[in-house]
Image (cartoon, rainbow, N blue to C red; front, side, top):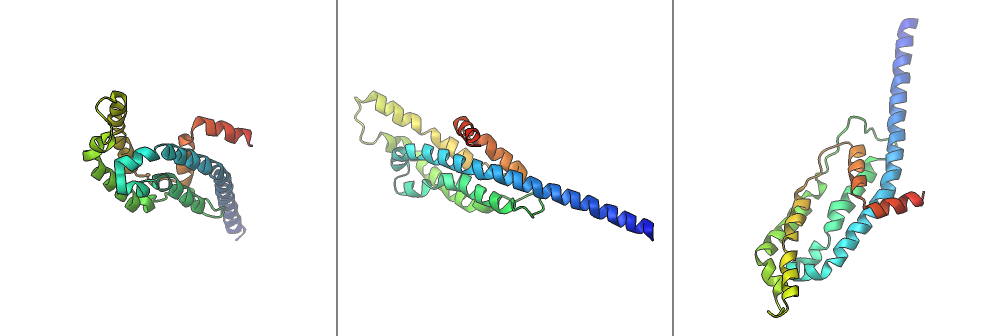
Length: 184
C-alpha cells in the first residue's frame, strides 16, 4: 500500500509542477502580450490613418469599413490571446483556433476585389494629364491592394497561444520595441 501511495504522490507532485509551469508561462506571456498588443495596434492604426485619403479614393463607399482592417488583423487576435492567457488555463500542448475573424476578413477581401479592377481609374480621377508625378503616384498605389489582400488571406494558424504571442511580437515595429524596453 505504501508503494501505491508513493506512486500516486509522485504523480500528483509532477502534475502539480507541470501545471504550475503552465500557469507561470501564461502569466509571463500574458504580460508580454499586454505590452505588445497596444504598440502593434497603434502602429498599424497609424499606418492606416496615413493611408486614409487613398482609401477614400480606392474604396469610395467601402472606405469606412476598410478602415477597420487593423482591428480585424491585430485587435481581435489580441483580444483572443488575452482570453487564452488567463493564468489558470491549460495551454501546454494545446492549439487555439484563430478563425474568429474569418468572416470579417472575407468581407474586406470582397471590398478589395471590387476595388481592384477600377483602382487606377479611381486613383487618377481628377488629375490632369500634365500632372505626371501625381498620375504615377496614383497608379503605383494600386499594387498595394494585392499586399493588403495577401495580409487578409493569411489565416492565423492554429497554434498555442504562446506561439501566437511570439508571432505578434515579431510584427511589432523596431521603434516600438525599443520604446517598450525603455518603459520596463
